[in-house]
Image (cartoon, rainbow, N blue to C red):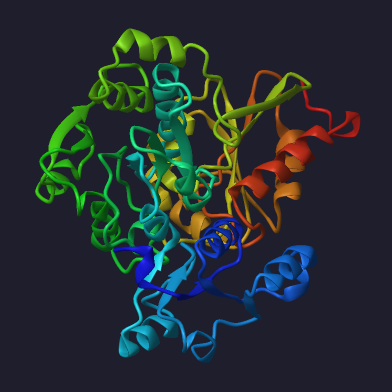
Length: 423
C-alpha cells in the first residue's frame, strides 16, 4: 500500500501516536481530520490551534461516522477496538480501509524493521535489541513503537541500510496489512487482554500477524519454551531461529539471537547487557525505608508478569496488586505465594482477585493505591519487600502503567517517620 493512494485521512485518537501521525500526514500534503472521545479542554489548546492552522479539522467527545464520511482512509489508535465499535461496520460498508499508525508509518519507512512482540518482556527486549544493534551500527538504528516513540515520528527520517527496532502490541498488529519486518520476534505468549479478545486463540491470532508478510529472506525469532511455539511456527514462511537459555535472562537470550542475524557475537551482546540497569516501572527499586525495600513493577499487567516478579524477588514479600479486571486467571500466581506475607488489593479487580485467591489467609482490600501502599508500609518489617506488581491494566484509575508507577513512586517517597516500619 502506498500513502499516495489517499488524500483525505481521518485519525481516531489524539494521543502521542495520533499527534505524530497527524504531523507526518500534513508534511506529505494530506487533508487530515482528528476524532477523539476526550474533552477538548483536556488537550493542548496551542497544539490544536497550530494544527488547525494547517487545515486539520477536529471532533471531540465522540467518534462519529458522519465526521469520517468523506475520508478515503481511517487510522485508529491501538486502544480503539474496531470490531466492537460502530466505526468498523460503517467503514466496511463504504469500502473505507481502516489501518493503524504502525501500518501507515511503514509505508514511508525505508529501514529494515526488527519487530518485537509478546505478552511479557517485549519492552525490555526491544530496548536491549536497539542498544546492542546501535553499538555496532551507530547512527543507523532507531527505536520506536509501543515503547513510547511513535513509528510515524521516526519513519520519515529513515534511509536504506538503517534499522528500526519496534515494540509492537497485539492491538497494533490487528490493524496491519503490508507491515513487513525483516526480523520478527515473539518473546512469549500468556493469556492476556481477555477483556478485548473473546478467547486466548483470538489473542494468539493477533500476535501471529507479525509474521503475515514475511518471506523466506526474513527471520522469525521464537521462544523454545513458549507453549504456543509449534502453533506459531505453522504460520511462518521465513527462517525460524529459537532462543531459550543462552543467557540467564530470556530477554537477553532473545536479543542475542536477533543480534546474531546481524552478524554480532554473544560477547558483543554481553558487553551491552553488563551496562543495562533496567527500565522504569519494571522491577524498579524505588527506595529502602525503615529497612524495607519498595519495588515498582507497574508494568506487570497480567498474572504471568507478577509470577516473574515473585520468582525474582528475594525475601518476604508484601504484594500490592489490582487495577482494571481483564478477565484473566489470577489464581495462576498461587504456587508462587510461599514467600508472600500478605496481599494488598485495590481498584476494580480487587473482588475478582480475592475470589480467585480465596484460599489465601491474609488479603486486605482498598479503594486506591495510596491506601494499599501505606498499609503495606505500616505492616512491613525490616528485611521485607513491598512489591507493587498489579497484574492488571491501569485504566480504572490511571491513564497508563507509567502514570500508575509514578504515583506509586510518589507515595513511597512521601512515606515518613509517621509511617515507620516495625523491626
